[in-house]
Amino acid sequence: MKDASPLRIGVIGAGWWATFAHIPAILAHPRAELLAVQSRSQSKADKVAKDFGAKHALTDPVALLDLPGLDAVVIATTPNMHYAQAKTALERGKHVLIEKPMTFTASEAKELCELAEAKGVQLLISCPWHFTPHGIEVREMIRRGDLGEIRMISLLMTNPIDKLLMGINTTPTHGQADVYIEPCHGSYNDPAIAGGGQIYCQISHAAAYLTFLTGLRPSEVYARFDYAGSINDIYDALTVTMENGALVSIASTGATPLSERNYEVRVFGTKGIVLLELWKGEAVFVPSEGERRVLPPIPAERTYPDRGPLDNFVDAALGLVPNGSDGRLGFAAMQVIEAAVESSKTNLPVKVFT
Image (cartoon, rainbow, N blue to C red):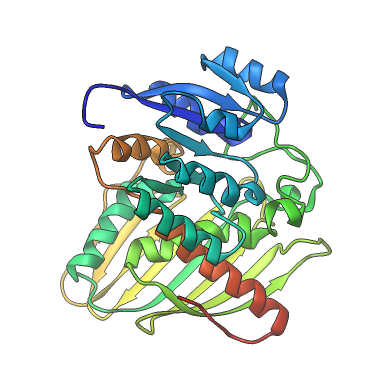
């Protein structure tokens, strides 16, 4: 796909996040075309198609995948639908951008990665944090060996979504004043639909970020959850051991004031440390020898590049750039999530299957 033709994209699950991030990004990309949108409601699909200029409005995901000329799909449905829809798309040779959490199980995520490789198409997990300048630079520093061997990582991630996870209300955050489409009831708080609470909704970001930054895969997980009277986990604490023996602590909750978000990542290597403040757009490298280096700050409006996954997806599918958020990162996240859920039930550490 290296000619001048646009990448013709269908969106499966044209709801809140798709209409906020993915569809506007498609419309803004000079090499992308919004071919079709899908929703379970025909009236909703018709409205989205009309408002955003899609040629087709459908309720059947398979019918969308069978449209002539379709090159790629964005899967932004609820997590319980991700695996089946992504598998069907990949089997048809379509490039796939899939929302997090990637699947319900690690084996499903692994299967999708293997299928994408066999079909020679791009599979990208939608994690905007993989597209910040700081994250990309720190990843390169680690690959170059600037930090030496990674021995420990501390990660604190909060985002005030506890009411979504508890089903108290469905108003999204991310600073939206006006919401084009509200999330459906159950999308975040029904475990049969969402998989779980904080572990599936937010640690899916953090667990993928570990492998994104370091290139290392998880090998063991010990986890404790606090449900705060809900059917979903609201406070999560994980100890993860990476394949090289590096120790990782993850603390995450959605129960914070609306004005407060944290995404603090501390990477400790044998030659230095990195201090990342992702929500604040700050990063510092402190070598064991020499002067500390403060990376240029990221403006507040760019700290969460919500259109980054779609932009990279289009360019990668067209063969213009490497895949910046490969599905294998989603697989690594699912390994952590699945092991953490089991550990929280057994109160024992759980080995991660490969």
